[in-house]
Amino acid sequence: MKNKGDGSIFYLRRDGKIEPSPLFSLFLAVLFFSLMTIVGHTEEITLTFSEAVAIGLRDNRDILLKTQDVEKAKLEIAEAQAGIFPTLTYTGDWLYTAGLYAKDISQTTSQITLKQYLYQGGKVINSIKYNGYKFEVSQSLLDKAKLEIIFDFSRAYYTLSLSNFFVELNKAILDNSRQHLDYINARYKNGQASETDILQAQASLSSVAQAYEASKTQQGAARALLNNLLFLDKDVLVVPSTEFKFTPKDIAFDQGFLKAMQTRPEIRQFESQLKADKSAIEVARAEGRPDIYVSWDYYGRSRRVTAAVNTRDWNDYNVAGITLSWPIFDGWKTKALVEQAIVDLKQTQLGKAKLIQDIALEVKNAYLFLKNSIEQIKTSQADTSLYKNNLLTAEERYAQGLVSLLDKNDAQLKYAISVFNQQQAVYDYTIAKFNFDKATGGFNEI
Image (tube, rainbow, N blue to C red; front, side):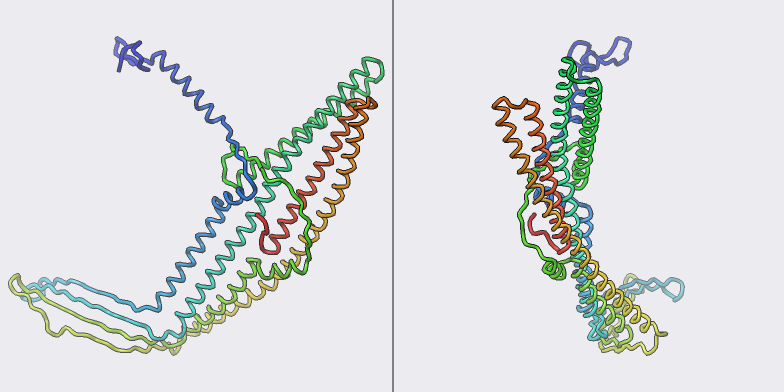
């Protein structure tokens, strides 16, 4: 502890009390503003769609959980394979008998058992098959989760990109509305416009300003959703860098459906589950079949009577043999287990049939939505060409002094609106394309 004025943030008073120095107040102020700077700092990162998908798949909790299920399924295969190998067991005990004989006796016994199953009714091999097919089911569920997550990323990522354009467009409309209000005010001062015209322009401006604020709210919601999917901090500002693009491709429902039947993870899941259910039936049937195993046992025993005398029995022995065990009657337990496994197989077969119908409907809807979005793009492209031509004409007439700056700005705004409408049409196409790829079992371009 130092005295006041020597640079310490605390000093000792003459009455023995500790008091903060003026330097301490300065220290707190600097610390406060430093923390405010850190807390208030917004980190901005630019991500392509592929980068966003890579980050999302890496950190997504659902993907991590499904990955752990796959790892667990691998270990269950190893557990089932353990039935192929022999088992070696050691059993040892020490017994001390006091008060029963003339002298107290300690006894040590040891047993080593080596056991190898030769036949278990097909239980081991079918258990291995069952767990192998369950591993394939887990892998299919992981692939399904990845497809769903990528589709969620596509909607969140491109929605944020479109909302950014929408905010810019509303800002341009707001500026244009203010220009119109200023123009009407100028005409009103010259007696060329009425008070009603001003009120209408003010109402229009208020409505546009409200739409602008609503678009910023939508932008914030889209950003929060993407940050949540990417497990980023809420203060991180993600800037999408992948642009909307439209590459016309030939699509056909029949080809899409055939591809879905080959590549959809759910189809692979049910096919593997069907094989697993058939193996489960054989595992249940094995409960009523005989077990055959060979074994070898070694027994050793020694006794200790006094500290000076230690006797060891010379009848330590080995036992080797083959054992047959056959459950003749188990109260119809095996029959019930087999019937349960058969019911599981029938349920899986029904589930697969229903899945095929659902996939056919999903692919059909995605196909129609994709075709409709392509037609919307063609319409929006025609509108954009029209308003672009109008803008060029307005610019030429403005250069000749035939129209006002406000007229040229109006033409420019209409062209900007048409461009946004085209971007929205491409956005709809992009989401429809991702939805069609998801329905057919895979994404062609990430």
